[in-house]
Figure 1 (cartoon, helix red, strand yellow):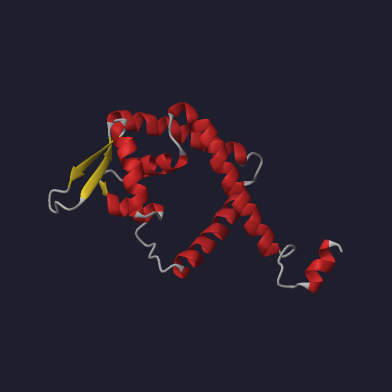
Figure 2: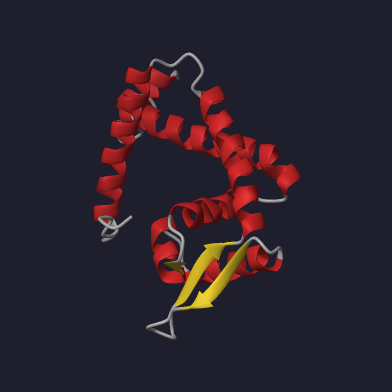
Length: 164
């Protein structure tokens, strides 16, 4: 039995559907991007989840742990595992909020800022390499398509994304 027959007999199997093909391509690209980024960042002794934190602290100095977890769509347990690693290496610091002692504010240290800039250069080069030859119009269309998908999935999960 060939693939087309299997699909015709079992229409709920989406193998040849363009949306399914798109989903698989996005998932594979994401996984390969993470693997490649991990390899390229290895000499800095950071992994993509660390980079996500560092880049957000670079952009949003003084963000709270809770706000950072929301931006990264991760739970507090993930934060409580990753932040001490970065703090121990002297890349970030946590300070109490002046108005609310229950809130911890996060900032990059000077060493963390330098490492983050180096890591962002590596990430930017990977993005440029992986989009080599792609017209800007294609990049914009892909971004718009992914942003629509993100909005649908955020809504599905009851996540308010307005402040991200």
